[in-house]
Length: 223
Image 1 (cartoon, helix red, strand yellow):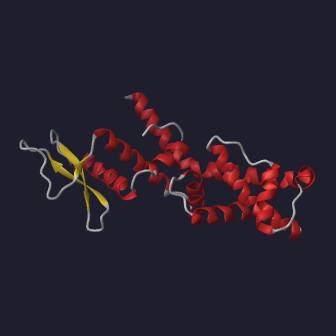
Image 2 (cartoon, rainbow, N blue to C red; image 1 turned 60 degrees about the horizontal axis):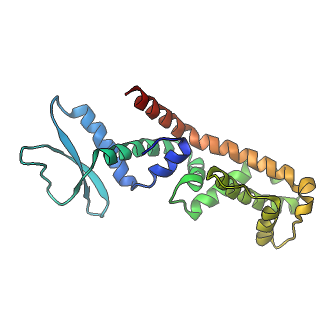
Image 3 (cartoon, one colour; image 1 turned 90 degrees about the vertical axis):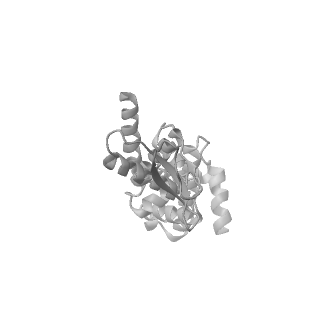
């Protein structure tokens, strides 16, 4: 895995099977503590009774590596990738559940509707906009969902949603007309508040991952 930034690391770590990644990370950590001097071992991926990959280690013998059932030997690069991915996943798991779901919505290649639903609630409830008058509050609630989608676009390098698109997005969900010509007067302040709040949530989600990325980059540069 190339470690470019925390966003890329979050995404790439979840390309691998979670069980495989964590199994390799745990096995490599165990070998680092328990293997004697000069002992050579190899990590092999096997399938357990549930069809999930798991890591097993074997001593290297003169006749080759012996396995009790078919498996595949991990290449050095793949093993390194999975070890780093395991460290990234461990960092993600330190986050509060709601923040973790928001991060998955923004960066995971396996994001679900549940991730989006929880991220929407987090973006709305912490924005302070629930004190708006009822008619404006209803539209602001759906603007929070639009702001999440817009933020996701931006972190993927695409343009954010413009006023016209936001208005159409909200109209589709409320059935009530929302005139983009009145954007500056009626909605720009709300949009700015939501965008700022989501920026802060995003930074909170990325913080522990960024620490791991920085540490791994330091180790790589020092090697």
